[in-house]
Length: 72
Image 1: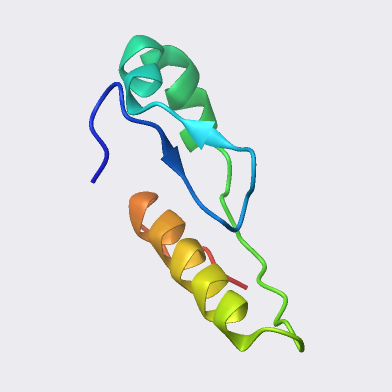
Image 2 (image 1 turned 135 degrees about the vertical axis):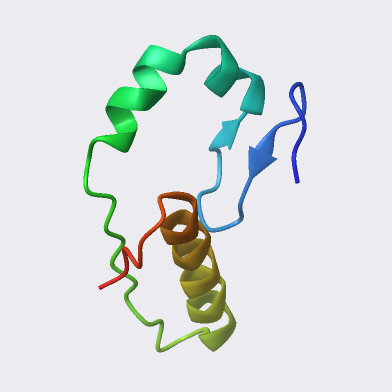
Protein backbone atom coordinates (compact mmCIF):
# COMPACT_ATOMS: atom_id res chain seq x y z
CA UNK A 1 0.00 0.00 0.00
CA UNK A 2 1.33 3.44 -0.90
CA UNK A 3 1.39 6.25 1.60
CA UNK A 4 1.00 9.96 0.84
CA UNK A 5 4.28 11.25 -0.54
CA UNK A 6 5.14 7.90 -2.13
CA UNK A 7 4.47 7.48 -5.81
CA UNK A 8 2.38 4.55 -7.00
CA UNK A 9 3.34 3.23 -10.40
CA UNK A 10 2.95 0.10 -12.48
CA UNK A 11 5.10 -1.34 -15.26
CA UNK A 12 1.85 -1.67 -17.22
CA UNK A 13 1.76 2.14 -17.54
CA UNK A 14 5.39 3.31 -17.89
CA UNK A 15 5.87 6.95 -17.02
CA UNK A 16 2.65 7.20 -15.00
CA UNK A 17 3.01 7.71 -11.26
CA UNK A 18 0.39 8.91 -8.79
CA UNK A 19 0.91 10.32 -5.31
CA UNK A 20 -1.94 9.15 -3.02
CA UNK A 21 -1.81 12.58 -1.33
CA UNK A 22 -3.36 14.00 -4.50
CA UNK A 23 -6.52 12.05 -3.75
CA UNK A 24 -6.75 13.63 -0.30
CA UNK A 25 -6.17 17.16 -1.64
CA UNK A 26 -8.85 17.00 -4.32
CA UNK A 27 -11.86 15.14 -2.89
CA UNK A 28 -14.36 16.93 -5.16
CA UNK A 29 -12.45 15.95 -8.29
CA UNK A 30 -12.00 12.37 -7.10
CA UNK A 31 -15.74 12.15 -6.47
CA UNK A 32 -16.34 13.16 -10.10
CA UNK A 33 -14.04 10.36 -11.25
CA UNK A 34 -15.97 7.80 -9.22
CA UNK A 35 -19.16 8.78 -11.03
CA UNK A 36 -17.80 7.24 -14.23
CA UNK A 37 -18.36 3.58 -15.01
CA UNK A 38 -14.79 2.28 -14.66
CA UNK A 39 -14.66 -0.69 -16.99
CA UNK A 40 -11.28 -2.04 -17.94
CA UNK A 41 -10.70 -4.14 -21.03
CA UNK A 42 -7.66 -6.40 -20.92
CA UNK A 43 -6.30 -7.59 -24.25
CA UNK A 44 -4.32 -10.81 -23.80
CA UNK A 45 -0.71 -10.63 -24.95
CA UNK A 46 0.31 -13.39 -27.32
CA UNK A 47 3.95 -12.45 -26.74
CA UNK A 48 4.15 -12.21 -22.94
CA UNK A 49 1.61 -14.17 -20.85
CA UNK A 50 3.10 -12.61 -17.67
CA UNK A 51 2.06 -9.18 -18.90
CA UNK A 52 -1.50 -10.47 -19.42
CA UNK A 53 -1.62 -11.77 -15.85
CA UNK A 54 -0.30 -8.44 -14.53
CA UNK A 55 -2.90 -6.55 -16.57
CA UNK A 56 -5.72 -8.72 -15.18
CA UNK A 57 -4.38 -8.21 -11.64
CA UNK A 58 -4.36 -4.43 -12.10
CA UNK A 59 -7.85 -4.46 -13.64
CA UNK A 60 -9.07 -6.51 -10.68
CA UNK A 61 -7.58 -4.00 -8.23
CA UNK A 62 -9.29 -1.14 -10.06
CA UNK A 63 -12.62 -2.99 -10.04
CA UNK A 64 -12.30 -3.79 -6.33
CA UNK A 65 -11.53 -0.15 -5.57
CA UNK A 66 -14.74 0.91 -7.29
CA UNK A 67 -16.75 -1.92 -5.69
CA UNK A 68 -17.70 -3.80 -8.83
CA UNK A 69 -16.34 -6.26 -11.30
CA UNK A 70 -15.55 -3.57 -13.84
CA UNK A 71 -13.72 -5.92 -16.18
CA UNK A 72 -14.90 -6.94 -19.63
